[in-house]
Image 1 (spheres, helix red, strand yellow):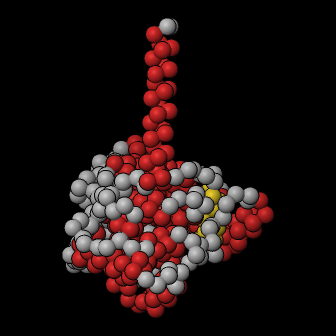
Image 2 (tube, rainbow, N blue to C red; image 1 turned 135 degrees about the vertical axis):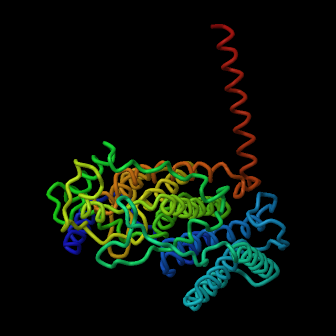
Length: 438
């Protein structure tokens, strides 16, 4: 069923969509976009390790690129001594060194990307200084994250009482990465800064409504789920920690931004996503709330007379091995959407994951679709998604408010700002005159 639905969706997309598809990024394009494209296509791992890696990649590239411009902006990694130099050389060396250290199994791919990128830079002092700058910021980034808790061993004992998470069928896998709740954030003050309020109690009207909703629409044999909802659930189920990086690259690829501007957008985007995973893992392992498949099969144990059990109930696809509340898809999508909607122009776009493509009217609609897909797939409650969207929006706005990636404007931008200030002043003077004579 999954393959046929996706094939039908791909065919419909090819026949009817007139908006932008994924950008074709090559080594000749902006180096920040190029290296993000390389990593999206190369790096494996879990969504958690992906989000951490791409945040490290983009923070190192931002600092290196910033140094090659006027060098006077705000840096994520403070106190690094670097000579500046060529911007492509700096960005490429920073990206390469971070990724080879994080993902040595793909070192040959990153080596090849570096060789191709540096081949576009003329030999000389600018190239040498650029590579030295990139290497310096990569080293600083790697040192900063060396003891961030991402590889810590944290014991976890599943619950047995109603409402408590326990391994889910069919894999019955142990709890995934409980240590991630304590990973050092990139920009958040702490992992619990945006912890969601507790989920509804098992006897509440909200829980009852959510139970009956997911039981009907999320079942593998649901008669209420539409074909498009099924397609959405199956599409987003294959997304990961790099999906919104792919979306970000595709959206800004044709905006004509400078390398410094691209570096800023991608640094804000990637750190918001990485922090959203840390935040949602804190929420998940604070409340340890059970998944729909457990709750529905054990509905006669929850003390709620309005939740009828179904011992054979199964969701559309397999349930991830971590607590349900809140939704990771929802929080990362909302965080990414908040950043992108503030920094780049909204637009209709298509997103491709593997062989599958789905199209959206805009960034916010894609984020909502990603959240809803988890309910339609039967692996999350509605309140999981709502809590994730709310927290993700807060994280995105927090990220935007931080100065870590706010560079001093480029010389050309200063000229435009001065003209803008003059126009604003003229407008204000005219406004005062109009008020005075009103």
